Length: 204
View 1: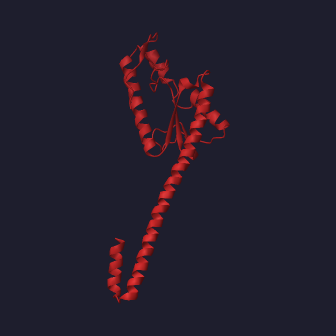
View 2: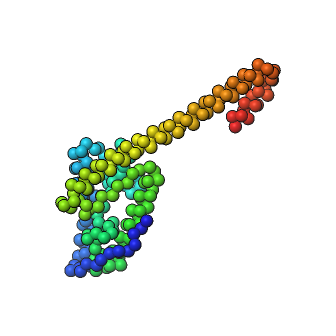
View 3: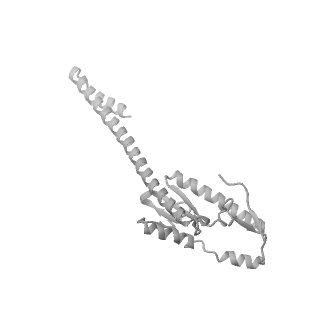
């Protein structure tokens, strides 16, 4: 669900050209928050891939073993609601507002697509990695990843049991047909062509 428009305006002392140049130099990958998360996960024994392009949104971190993807989002660029970092410049306000709203809609669509593929999606916000909150955020993140891994294994076990049940039912149904056919053959002389036609109709 796309959050309603909710932002503040900040006094902008830069010219339009200066603001554009400043924004264009902000990194979209290998940001400091991303590196912080990656270092912590590696120190905790997690192994992962980065920016996997075949997944929707090319998630920042992909932990296949836990079937979990992580996005480390900048609060401004991704419109973190009620965050002090989500402040729209007064210069070219309509442009920045539209751009961020598009990002919010895209993030929501990407999340839906990933979940439809069975992936667990975690978003870590830039403000959650500030010194006063970093330890709690990273500790909580590790707990979420491990829980996602446990949930994934349980889901796979459940799917496996259902498949085995279906396979067993089919095998039992085949055995019943064979027993019935054997009983019929012992009582009646049925021409081979009729028997084969009957078997084909039963399989269909």
